[in-house]
Image (cartoon, rainbow, N blue to C red; front, side, top):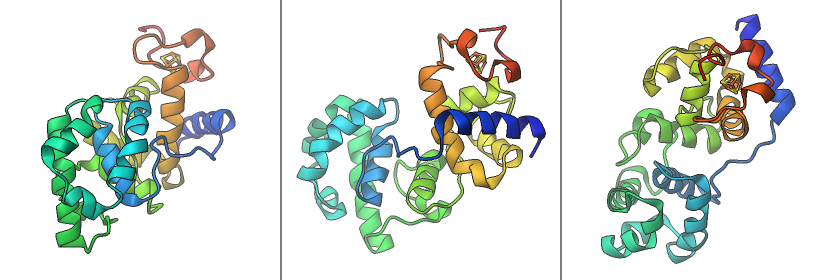
Length: 209
Ligand code: SF4
């Protein structure tokens, strides 16, 4: 790993540490999977508000597999795109039961066969549930990786592969948590706090934003 990359990661480590819980509340792999599906175009805070009651009403994969689509749509209405999300969650629950013995798989190829599950969601599961080194490229990771010069692309899948080359495996799970913390408080999308940024000496974008 380049010296510059390690310096940036060391500064993030100093700032945020390694004991960062998952941003989506969950007690089981399937809960994190469905919460991640619901989190597309929605805040984690809103998803956590919805799931606080949702996972009491539907306490298992089987309960979601048997759910009535229009009722589930109402239950998750406030996360947005509720029709597609409800449809995918029910289909996903049915496939987990039919193809994977009721367990969320850990293999990326298996995970991405599930309805509504792309590489980002699959990598959330691999990293947080199975502790498999995986790079989750969400909106914060994509933006910050570009601003810090780790990647030069707007394509999340290309960014994922470029980050895997740029950054040692030991950091793959951590960078998502660090970049989200950094992106929410300092390197925000529209109004980054460049004056107060502890990484400004490394930033390629600070003059443009
Ligand atoms: Fe983000 Fe500004 Fe820091 Fe660059 S200097 S990383 S744009 S907050």
